[in-house]
Amino acid sequence: MPKPLSLPFDPIARADELWKQRWGSVPSMAAITSIMRAQQILLGQVDAAVKPYGLTFARYEALVLLTFSQAGELPMSKIGERLMVHPTSVTNTVDRLVRSGLVAKRPNPNDGRGTLASITDRGREVVESATRDLMAMDFGLGVYDAEECGRIFALLRPLRVAADDFDDEAADATEGEL
Image 1 (tube, rainbow, N blue to C red):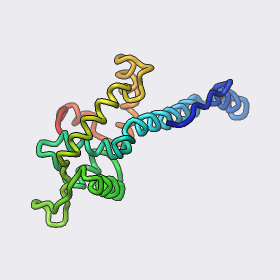
Image 2 (cartoon, helix red, strand yellow):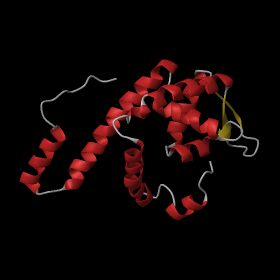
Image 3 (tube, rainbow, N blue to C red):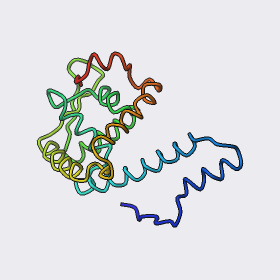
Image 4 (cartoon, rainbow, N blue to C red):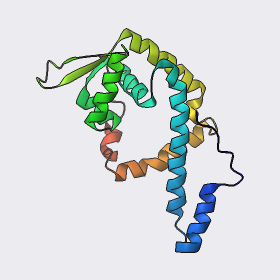
């Protein structure tokens, strides 16, 4: 985990004040800067929690996704879609999991050009252990209670809908599907 900054002032609040003096009030600047810093902090914490398992958070997410699938396997294209990452990133992530013995790959019998990624028994053990550790540290969000976490999720959802991550109306109809 990165060393705490322990600054004697809030640099984002300071930047916000200087921004106001120079260009006027733009609350979205302070908000985005706070979100980006929060992402850095959280990613550092969760990566540190899964590092003992030879994982990054991205690899952990792929393992979790495979455990959520009925057969423990998914097409590579589906993994990229569900994790919302570029196909090259999926290939890199899955290949690293294969080298670690946590995932296996095989041709997709339903798609001559596609590949299936399958979680191994060792992958299932690792994801269970890593999940226990992440849950014990509240995924880095222990400073918030359950209600506040729900509000954060709800607050960010319209941004994701506006980015066309998913169809909000269709999502309500298909809740629970992988």
